[in-house]
Image (cartoon, rainbow, N blue to C red; front, side, top):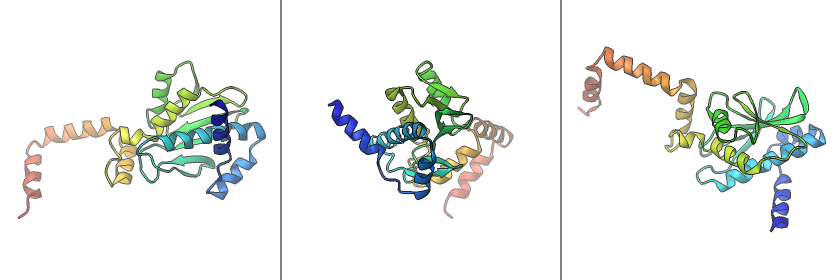
Length: 196
């Protein structure tokens, strides 16, 4: 059974790149860095394939880094991978810093992984990856918008951009102020919405 898993993983490491520019970035990494990043890439792609509602990922470059987007489903937040610039023996998996993803990962796995602020999980190129914990974190990222309630309708891009511009708490506070300042407005809006 272990051998079959190793064969499958090796096949995923060699999964062809759809984007030539992404392939060039991987080719430019030193061997140890490339090997670790290919392992992270395989874990992202494997995890996405097993999750309902995520669909195929788009592999592209963002800020020059290999990036994985749920473009078709809009279910998740972008995951990026790259080497750590200040340390050639480390790589990182990056998440959108305006989400609570890394905070959640820290709460779930405080000792199993090392974190870089509110935006990344860090890995030594020679160290073993805590696979079960990392796959769970990847799954949380790939379903982030779906869990927050923003991707179940057809207008995913509008919901994602709205949530990126305003935190929920700000929106709630603003609507409370508006309601208390103009209590009759909702009734007027209801009348206008009725067909004449």
